[in-house]
Amino acid sequence: MKIAVCIKRVPDTEARIKIAPDGKSLDEAGVKFILNPYDEFAVEEALQRKEKAGAGEVVVITLGPATAQETIRTALAMGADRGVLLQVDRTPLDGLEVARALAAELKDGAYDLILCGKMAVDDYNHQVGPMVAELLGLPCVTAVAHLELEAGEGTAEREVEGGIEVVEFPLPAVLTADKGLNEPRYPALKGIMAAKKKPLDVKLVTLGAGGLELLAMMPPAERKEGRIVGEGPVAVAELVRLLREEAKVL
Amino acid sequence: MSGAVLAVLEQRDGTLRKVSHEVVTAARRLADALGGTVDALIPAAGPVTGADALGGFGADRVVTMTAPSFARYDAEGYAQAAADQIKAGGYGAVVFAASAAGKDFAPRAAAKLGLALAADVTDVAVEGGAVILTRPVYAGKALLRVKVTTRPALLSIRPNVFTPVSRPHPGAQETGAVSVPAGRVVVREVKAAAAGALDVAEAPIVISGGRGLKEPANFAVLEQLAQAFGGKAAVGASRAVVDAGWRPHGDQVGQTGKTVSPTLYIAVGISGAIQHLAGMRTSKVIVAINKDKDAPIFKVADYGIVGDLFEIVPKLADEIKKLHG
Picture 1 (cartoon, rainbow over the protein chains, first blue to last red):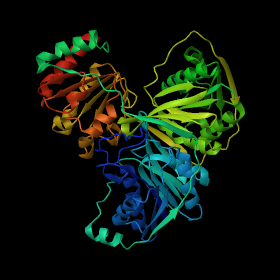
Picture 2: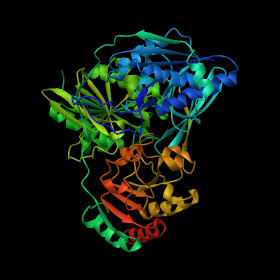
Picture 3: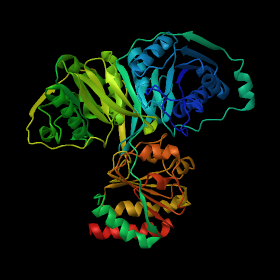
Picture 4: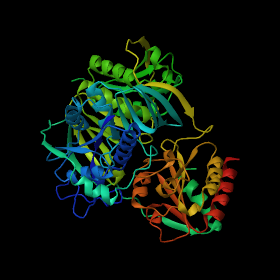
């Protein structure tokens, strides 16, 4: 099986977000960057599928700055075979620009499966996977939490509001991974050493302007200072009164 | 360019989903600012319960677009039907829901049209004729103000944010069959969650539990409190307990789970890690119950009770039951 995994370098979910002086971007000082958590599920799934098939290749592709090479090395250390960095000066706000660049790279790769995370935890766009599928003319299932593959087809489960949707689809396809799909492995020391020697292509790409212009990045509205109503079960009556009379939510 | 706005809606099993009211509400706001009308589009297999009430939320025209494959969700079919209508309608803006289905087919429709899609929008405005949107990033740790430079402006709205506004305004009803090929991804079945269970992302009240619950079986305490709210509450969970396998992944609230904005969020035995706070800080009212008075959760909570949750929560359930009884 030849599998491509589209990954992204993102700030750690535990990172505090500080806005840079330009008022439009993240102040990256002191911020740790990681492989997007949903992409970890995608990489793990690709590795397991290749291992199960007994043969194949797992290629990780990312669009990002030069530093995203580290992110690719993380995936290579997990066990992916080679990486491609589509290097840009700035990651565009418009997911379609990202999808176009990825689709151009994926187009002639003859992949049986293209995996992505269901979304990146920085931009919350949750759109690049299905856009890549559309641009490549492939079927797509998003937010896959359970997957079974047979020759030429697959069955996936995805969470929808109040239930689980069970879908069938033909291969090749684009799938985006949700939490629950698998347990991503930690790169072992041996994998980390091996990753340093695995091929990593860097291709400079130029993206279009896209259709979204960033005006400002702002901190969220501060929440009004709350208060401790009391201690122990005796405080419950007062809490209920406040919820009814002050907050008016009951 | 026209100021008309298209609202792309969702039904399941022939009944309009509640988020559709919010989509029409957001579309109405944009249309009023752009000086246009609102068309509502519902892909469905037949008549849709609730379509006739959409005028009351601001739709001037409701078009039920039918195809046999729309009996169940059909990603490619929905995307094609929406794209065809967008091309034909000459709209200034198009509003989708950032729901499970909307996140799946709206990007496909956008790519078909070669247009940008602003996802998960929490506020809409029009300034100097341009559509300006606000959307959270980093799970709400920051907000972006974004100007859409392509027309029509495509956006999906976050559920539970746009409060539906009723207005006395009947909408015209139309039904038209569309001819789109059935998609390659076929929904074989939808396994329903436990009867009456609400999704944490959509419930008006969310009660979440963390490590303070001590063991999985103790979530029964939270389930009982949820029941006391008479079917309006869902039970959520912190990442710690989901990673420990105590609760299903779909219940996780936080940056690698769901971002929720209920009217009332009750955090029980949750310390308040930054990635959890990011997922629930836009809730209207936050209540925290925790034995540690220095827990970070109390910094974002409107009301807190310090103490043993196993004494406090059952008492709270009793009080709520009294209100509803």
